Length: 400
Image (cartoon, rainbow, N blue to C red; front, top):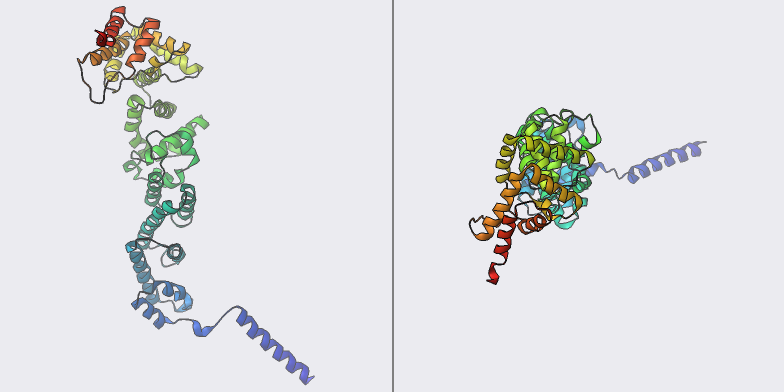
């Protein structure tokens, strides 16, 4: 009996020691506060953070908290000076960001976000844009959803994407690379009016609004944006609507403004006129609306005069429709001649004046589609034969 009890005790002690060994618990390797102080003195950041939590929770006093904050700020300062930030160091930054004394420290978070921008700037040099996008989105979602930081990440992503950073950007690209999560906080912020009208935020917001407007007939911008954000966008919306050389941007802008009742009678007239002149393919309803506009122009001399003055300010003059020979485009050209002859005559005259040398415009002929226009004019009698003859004389003058 005695031997059995002794064997049991021996086995129990063996299992206890074995268990401790398997968990690699060695009290002698734990650092105390003096060890941490020594590491702080030598700026040994990695080792410090590896052992800072060796101090038991009940002993983490003000001295310990101040030491952790000082080392974390020093660590970030050191990273800001380094040419490159390693994955190991950045993972350490993310790790300590969850520590209770740091995750609510505004000064630490600002420096941390600055380091994150620097780290992800490096990412685009060694990884694909898509990989960096996913990594940045993961970081922003888990560690930082502030409005300012999100906008900075959006700028970084646009800056490093050659397609997004181009002037001719398609809706497909915007949808494929969703940047809305990064700027939604700013778009709903009370300070949004200072940022919403600037790029890239304006571009992201406009495309988001356009998507929502197309998919939901009852959608209102106030359900997605702070009222001051939309207010800040109105001037640029008006500019895009009435003077942008990109008909796709005009269409998006018109759809958003019209859906939210921000379109005046004159705005509507100029929009459809510009789209007609650019040869945009309309759906059935848009085609009817555009020709109704032309008919109304014929009855409203003041409106024609107002629109003509505005069109004269656009360089180059809109007129891509004159380059097409389809049945619909020729019908539009005839409609313009019938209902808005002042502009057709102005386009024809501008072309002749440039070719004859009577006017000189920086950047070349303001009537960009001059030759195509006269080719169409010969087919459809858009202008008097005297102007066509003048054009032919100018084109054949070199033979004399």
